[in-house]
Length: 186
Image 1 (tube, rainbow, N blue to C red):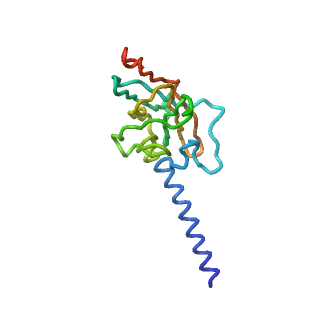
Image 2: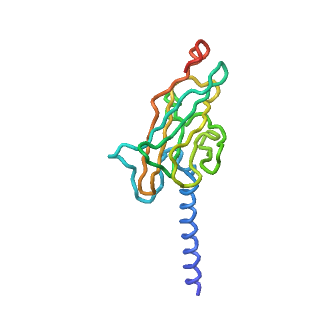
Image 3: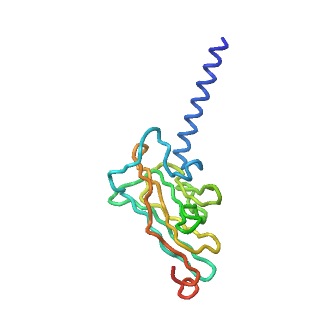
């Protein structure tokens, strides 16, 4: 009797564990993946041989002596779609190299995406809400106060559970205080 009860309890625990994992995938990237940005999709590996059918771009939308903001867009090429994504900004500067930087503005349509708090930050990563097909997503990103230096945006994109790409990057970008004050350029 005890053994039967124990087996049922273990089975329920394992089932709940699997449901939690599935829910994490459907509703975005869990915080545990902030550093690696690699989806925990059983034993499936990222696509290495094929170039990703996705592009990540960033452009300045506002700059003045106190504020700089960037539009960050992930889009599918050639009619492709994606179901999941995870986007961050990473530093290329000094002792903060590879640190997750800045914060994203609140999401306009929370059916599509939400922000998560990776370690040492708030709203410093964007991920999907529902794993429905998407052609593009756009976010507004703010660098940390008084940040000067180089950085880039990086994304993980999931087409299907078994098919995903990691390390989709923008070219390096930079924010230089004097440059922003003198010309308004980044």
